[in-house]
Length: 165
Image (cartoon, rainbow, N blue to C red; front, top):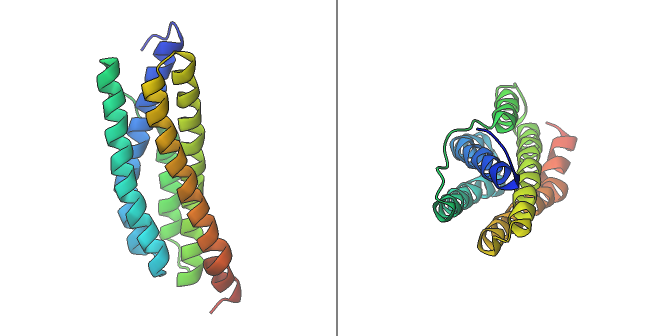
């Protein structure tokens, strides 16, 4: 894709996020299954449903832009998911595995927060207030998920992992 202006970059970045969200849809159920903590597994399952909504919102934006969402592979998300997969393959105590899963998930959340913040800013600059509102809603949810993971880590899981078996 040739990028001549901010609109082209906006579409390119939206495609990157679209692919990232679809990769995440496949990874989150595996993370939920690998969790020994019921609250963490539930958080992953809830975020799977949210991620489905994020994909649908991106599809709505693409439809409004009269653009296709496919055509880009998000290499960053691919790498983040691969790191999470490596963590799940470790021989770790359940509490330590849960802490590792949170670490992997928060890396993903921070990547998404950066991506959605950027495209929301582009939408605002381009005068696409509808896309900006849609993207802000997703950005808010990604931030809430990050906070939920932090609370689980700080209030329970990291403490259990520190105590060991």
